[in-house]
Image 1: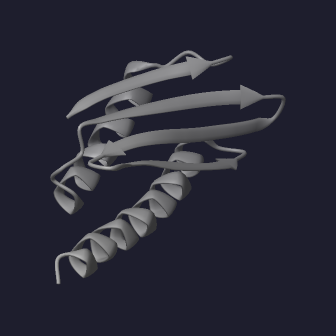
Image 2: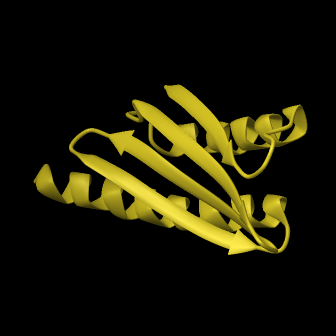
Length: 97
């Protein structure tokens, strides 16, 4: 899986990069068919946002969330992503019947 991490109005420090990489690594174990992921970290005024676009066979999964703290925003965004991946996997299993 290719992972791209970028920032808008925020410097992606090594600590942020490592945090995202570790968290996305946990996601990989949920869905082994992920081809690539693009994580964008955005700061607008006092709001920290984390967005992800995940490419899986036949679908692009998008999740985003925000918080006053970037690390919390990333965690909340990944929770949404996990729920969507679970739904995706259930749909795929349902189509195999």
